Length: 334
Image (tube, rainbow, N blue to C red; front, side, top):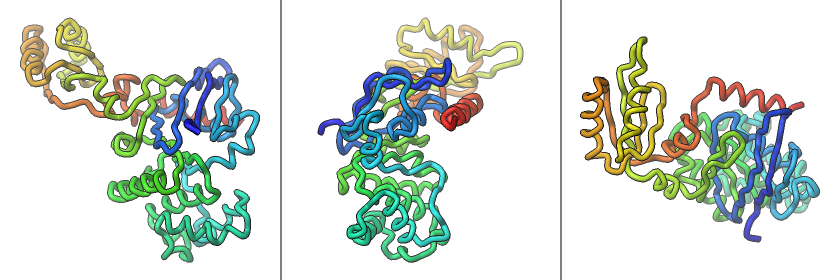
């Protein structure tokens, strides 16, 4: 099987709101696939349909060859899920948590002991198998949750913010486990994350979703190269009387070496053909138009810049988007 996840015009509406809009993606077997988007963009709704928690309004998807509408039972047997929020029983040992979930997932009794030992070895918790989970560090708990998601031999593992709240060193450690899992267990991993470096480091391909539509899908390097040239960030001194950044944004669009302009309220992102030669020209242009520039910087585009280009905002921006995310989850519980 070439594709273990394939959607066909997958759509989900909540009243007049189109949360997922004719989604068409294909995820290859053994791939680590990143799924990025602002809060309320449709990530949670999409994955909920993949996991058969939500039914599509129209269209469908196949998971491991099984239709999410017609073959819900087979789909659920094919997937493992690691939720963003902690869901372990911290009064039990690591081994007991795995044993409980092996029973829930229908792992045959004759195989449970062997499978639990295998999983504990995969996530390197064999020496802490009989320790109460509340004595585990944050990283150890996350590894146990990943192990629990593997207990029933899934073909696809959904990881929702797998390193949220962990320190950088522990995050890097978890990344190593995820790489090993994809290779050793030969499973496909779909990853949602707010850490751009995580997506950049781990994912074979990345899809960016916004307003229910896939707005970009490619490898990280191709996405970054698609921006072309260099990124110049400019900060101006805005006043109550005049938003100077807005004025400069409109004026620089006329310059032939400026490829793209993104106004981020207090700063301006310009994609240009050659950053080193462009900066002096832009500063001269600002002076000629009586615009005072507070600071400038130039660098190569990052994955975060790609995200800003396609969505118009930082991935960690909250405000209205987080409220929309809460409304989306509330609608899903109805």
